[in-house]
Length: 77
Image (tube, rainbow, N blue to C red; front, side, top):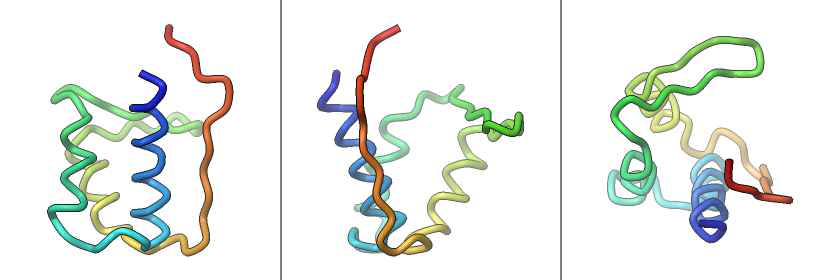
């Protein structure tokens, strides 16, 4: 499970940083990990449903060059 978490965050870093190709094939990694009922609640309390979030992320390719993300102290709940 830890490897899956790291791989998913590597995807976010590569996608948003622009290191991954801007293609449907590269982006397919993300929707494959999200359940149909997935929703994200931001720290500000806004809720984004799965399809809305996927559209926003698909359009955000390369929007954060040099952006880094890492995982520390991962735990299952």
